[in-house]
Image (tube, rainbow, N blue to C red):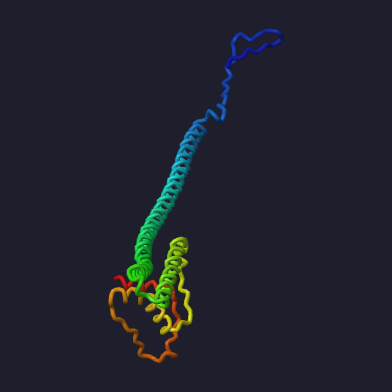
Length: 224
């Protein structure tokens, strides 16, 4: 910088040179620029690191969700398969039930038709007591047939697995004598000999039995 001075109103002919140094502001300093650049790179690095960590967490959360959904699907699949097996088993039970019922229906029908045929084929030879006995047999088997029909209508018990034993104290001798009385007309019409033998004393033969179910078994075995 050059400057002139005046003395008594007269300017000096030669200028004087003054050197002035002006410092640059801090934001234009090399050290500040370097720090700013380094800080920017650090910020960018931290941002990418945070973003990568966030993406990894999202990935883990997504994988966990997929694993949970897959496990749920597998569980649902197993449940559906189990239900399918149960339905298939229930269908088999129903088929077996209707097959057994059809078999059981044939027994009382046969024991009704047998005495009826006997009465129709021998109208002149029958005594009143014989006719009454045959009619009573037909009535008993008619009631058995009605009971079987009621069991078919009560199929909901089978579907709900509520078929339970109804045990009663039963005289075995009287029970089997009753069964034999049912089959007696049929046996007679076919000319078959029969005999009911008990090796125990009569008063000892009392058991807890489900009479209806045991009667079904005996009816089925008679036509097996």
